[in-house]
Image (cartoon, rainbow, N blue to C red):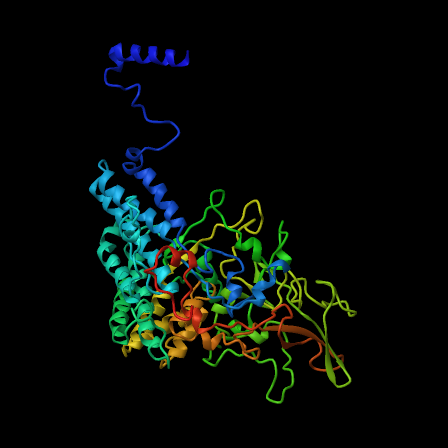
Length: 610
């Protein structure tokens, strides 16, 4: 009976004048978007682009709480069920990224815009195509810096059901060919991205130049430093390893891109006279002219929980956990003193006696202001409230100090003054600093940012001008050009150093400047890899202050009648929760390729040591 009624309806419609053009049957569906709607609607295409931007990969970034504990800049101090962060060894698959599903989606979108976007203006079509090519190149960069050369696929691979899959089996490109592809793509599209120049969250011309600046610096470094190894890491087909003769060309490309950005519309953030607060504000305020390209967040729409997971202990709101990242003493000491001396903290004199400081923060006096903007240390404040960091008391007994801590945070000693601060530090504890330091950088101070209901909306920086200055300095230095010094001095002056604080440069200085300027921004792991230094820094030695995370605990002196009574001394400690030194092997310079990929494509060459 049902079929009968449908037949009657069909005949009736065909006999009616209103159905003569089949309008009744050709209505757009209500539950799906058609190709014509998607590829011809700037609004829908912008939504598609937002999805793709959201899929851009990172290793530790994008507020992935705990990721940064896997390097020497911090340790894990959160839930014990994740204490593997402190017993971490770099596995063969560490950092692996091989996302050809994403590449396929981008290639499909490019082909569909070319064929189906008939109602877009030429300017709209050109811009969307350029953005897609930018995202694809970004993905290829994220793959090559982890895996070495990967298959370069720029069109859809469509199976013809012939039973022969070999046309779909694309071999790996040479490592340098992937870097060349990224450069060529950026050169081809950068002018097409100019309509986005006012945006910091969509690819624009300067974001393209920033990708050039970074990627070409990586390629140059690998070409130089890999070949300086006693046994360079390479494969016979060049899937891994870049010829040394290519280094200067890549350094030049990086430098040229950096210079174009520096001469563009951006400026180092310098809106706050307080140099330390200024450095924090740079990434927290979402204002100013330093950030070139960022992943954005918005309260009520898309937020992250970095502040929720890392707010200082005494300022938790509705958190069940907090303070999951404890910065390392090694990081804190990498920030130099403003007089130019090295940043080692002076807790003892040449004879091995404790140095007593009048105020708990005095040991950090006259330090690079970037330290304040990056780390919360004793005697500072957050959200306009003083932090309460004090490990315990040092009681003078029988000619020596006896260091004691309270079993309870925030408890007073017998003299009615603080024993152990509510913010710790406390050894072998959860949700409180284990090193004596908390992370400040990118922990939002906005109202309710550390609550579950609101969370934080400060952005994640993909590229900012501070990095570009560092890229320019490094490339210029490697090319033997004197302008590198000016770039470094500009960053140091922004951090409180006097003008022209350095009169000469070394690569060690440049490397340290990258560490302090870009701390917790997802650079150090890849920097040490491209310089071929990772196996030397994370050497597995239990006596190495970089392979092992150390802390610094401050104690209030109890020594009645002595000039040091009421002052503070400091002790270097290895937190109990940090179990094993980081160990990076030569095999870790290139992540292993998943066995499923190797099984599906016999043309794929394994990485060295795998």
